[in-house]
Length: 142
Image: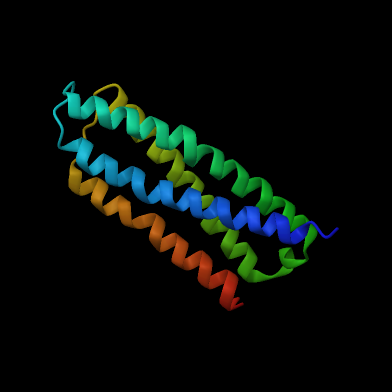
């Protein structure tokens, strides 16, 4: 049985889940930044952020990487320039994921020093990387 289509399907599903989490987590930060530390609202956001990160973002990122590496090894795309650019985009999203995790810990400790506006800007960054990566994979410009 050819396993590559199954790995691709799992990869795409994991990317969807990861991107959903990366787009929603900073939106939670926007609202959390306006909540008073220690308030019921703040404590609710802490639970939501932790569950989103640990229950969806982290596992889906791991599966994206595992299936991406499996597909990379199974194909000969590694010699093409678009694939190198795609990997840079995925690495950037991974670094962004880790920044979000660090910011979540700041909220967890009631030590957030950033504004809601800061998080609004960072809320758009994953979408920009998603556009770049999708264009690279579909159009393969180089």
